[in-house]
Image 1 (cartoon, one colour):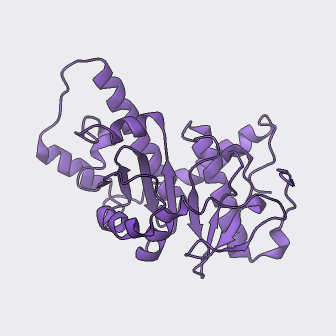
Image 2: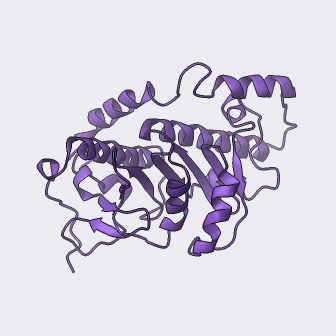
Length: 262
């Protein structure tokens, strides 16, 4: 089997827009791993190629920390592979059900991230869901969808319910399953995921302490949530993204893996 992880750079074989999308998406995979939100070779992050209906997605079999711009597959919204590197890796079509549904229904969404983190799965299994007990968690008050577990996401009939439960939001708790965020850019989707994950970790820690929880008044929660929306102050994730890329660049020489932008 041809299961190598050293992929030829295709920068000169794609448009400038597609190459930039590839670099950004590969960086996002590396960052999800960097902040301990990866799950072996599972899960996906997808990104729409600007000016097209085509998407980029990881090969099924690579660690997130191995993914490069040139290793990403190009697919259509139905999950059909349009291009991939010359290797025996394919894509996890069954897991793409979630992403495909949202990309088709939400033209405002360019990037979708789905995770199975320890804290995310823990909160997704709590009847209370995400509690607005920290400033980070308050960001999601009124802006978080919930989707009940229906088994592994392989049934196309589930797509309509996924989209309905996400609604206009850019974040969702998949009950008994994990977390999902999306956004108009990679940076915004990643920033939302980072904060949703951080809120889940804080909640699990606080509840494990078995101390009484303090929750602010509803008007404070609503005000806080509003101030974190893109139109209130700034779209969170845009300013942060270059800093995230600088972090990856600084750590690249010590990783032992091919650079994400190769």
